[in-house]
Image 1 (tube, helix red, strand yellow):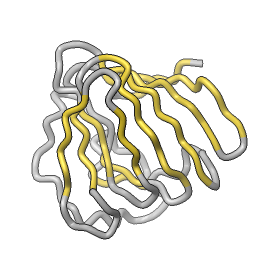
Image 2: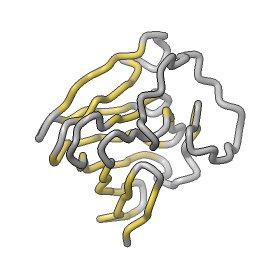
Image 3: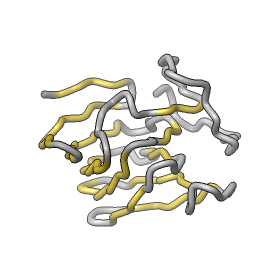
Length: 138
C-alpha cells in the first residue's frame, strides 16, 4: 500500500515482529523531518538517486554530519540518533529502510522543526539546531 507524505511516499514491503522494511521515495527538492526513534534502529540502502543524509555520528555528540550517498551506499542509524534525508537532486530518490528493534511503529518518531506541522507526542529535545531549511516547498 502506498502512503502519501508531503515529501513523497512510502510502501511497506515486509512487516514482522521487531522488523519492518519500507521503500521510501523522496521527491526532488524535498526532505523528511529531522527525527529520532527510541525503540528502533534503521538501516538505509540507496536504490536510486542521490541522498544527502544529516545525522549525529553518536547519539550523545552535538555534531551533525552531512553525508552524500548514491546507489548502493548504506548507512546504519542507531536508536536515539537525530537524522533526516534530503533529495537536492532533480530525480526522485529511492531508498530501502529496514527498521529493527523493540517496536517498529509510526508512533516511534520524535520530530524536530517539523515543516509539515504534524503533532508530537512529546516536546522535541533536539539540541542540534538546523540553521537552514533547504526543502524547496516540501
